[in-house]
Length: 398
Image: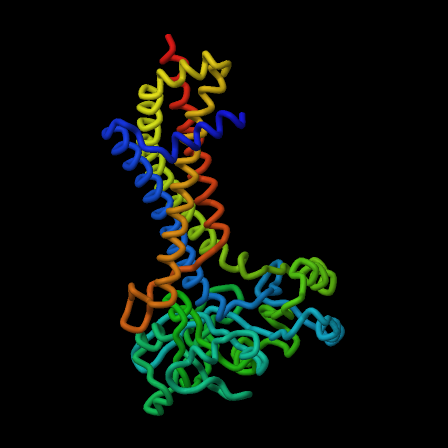
């Protein structure tokens, strides 16, 4: 094994007397380097885009969200609140009321979700910093903060006193509706702010004070749609989840941030896998050059191989020489490609060569897991290609 590896190193670092073989070897090496570089850059760019996409939902979503197992609302009594407040792993929690409503401003209407929040909500979510026009809600006030898309659909500005924003919610019940006005509860509020997070959220939620939401929906003071919980940095998420389930029993479900955005995470992970497989196919095509290079080396070194056999090496040991030579080419090419890729990613992070907008650089992220994935992919496929090409050694002796 050591003899085979030693000779393989000599073959790898020495030039061939045949210029064509040297050219083929260089082409194979450049192909491996380019494959490793492109795969690493694409994975790093996708990791940056993934982090950029999730940063918008992370501004809005809590660490854990307690929701009713069935129905729209559940009750939270004083004993349950005291247990939550006594939990040292829970940094803060907020009561939330959510319900689908119809928004109406002057002659324009659009469906949306009202989200009634208490005074602690701004500590749970970064939504207050997302308000780019106007201000956040005041306590116990008939005010609304609209998403950017909702405000455009309604043509509603901040503190437009020429008309109040009307909110309509269907009354629960059965039977035939004889009077449309009696089928809805309604309330009026002033638009005091407009926020922008992403297209989906901007088009979905209208924030109000939780007292206003309870009055509109005629709920009791201990009824909520959800509890949004933020944890301390050292907290164990699964442990806190179990404790919350123990406090509320079987009436609730507790979801973390990934579960709240399940479809988004699945889409991003699927796209990441698709990108990896596509560029892995490109690397496989590039490694055909390695196979060709090793086969050419086998043919050129046929006389040397016969000499090694006469000196006592077995055919398997001679085969290992070319196997190791191809493996060294793949590993060396992968390392060089990774180094170039890391330098390229660092340059984008610090110098921002590529811009999406004049103020936003193309997002990239350097992750050690991507370095490992690229190195293992290049090495694994490279050694496989070397094994296939080294098989030609035995045929060359016939």
